Length: 151
Image (spheres, rainbow, N blue to C red):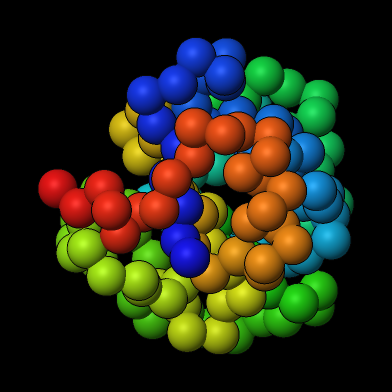
């Protein structure tokens, strides 16, 4: 099941990726990431809003050493060391699949799962492993099925 966390007081802000990873029961450094369609409040030299591959350890450092809010963005998880040219980067603002009312897969078919920041007001989780999904629902009981949130 794909999940969405929105309209809750249980998070300080959407999307605090450090809190998201903690709730999922793993670290950003467990995977490598293709990040795309990023808008954030962070303006450091070690991360840009360009679509890019990010080593898990670098993402982990970014989110643990800075108070970063991802306003928009897609984080596609991959087995460490994965790299390939990405023709059509995943996007969050224009992707109607989230609101289709059916279960969708990560936008990059090779991705293990996908985490999306939606306009500072929701965290969307696509294709999570079952244990991570359960861990997240325990941490955030307000999380619900994305398919039931069709707009």
